[in-house]
Image (cartoon, rainbow, N blue to C red; front, side):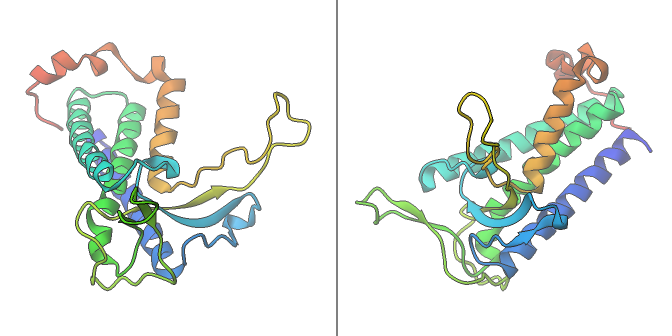
Length: 227
């Protein structure tokens, strides 16, 4: 398989799994639903939340912060896509191509939620500027959302769907006062694709990344066709 075909395959695969899981969860579960163990493992469960902010459930202020974050994400997707094309053209290591492809797919998967979910579904988490003493707050919704394209918000106002939760806690004998959940954030397939890829790059950096792969000045000047 060529580098280009590998990148296309991984991007389409992650986007399909990510969007299918998000749409299925949002159209079948109510918010905070969390009684399904994934693969019956006991420590991985479904916990449906909607995230107006960054990865792993971290929020980013009010609706204007969300607009800013969404625009930043769109810019990042274009930048990563450009970088991926350059890496393919200079025949970078297959593993590095795979990692950057997964990062691109994860970033694109989350921006699709923000761009279109407010238009696709009839209910979702929205920003209410009048409550909380006039400071505003993100407000959830009752029941189950329907995929009927009636819309509940505008473009860039949809929230990212998160659903995977590691449900295990530090043991009582854990040092340094560690207690409670080991990893409380809720995340999705796109988040996992990004985090996994970054981890692989960090661990195997010297084996899969060459000097020319991160020579951005030379990459900007590159005019070689992707093959």
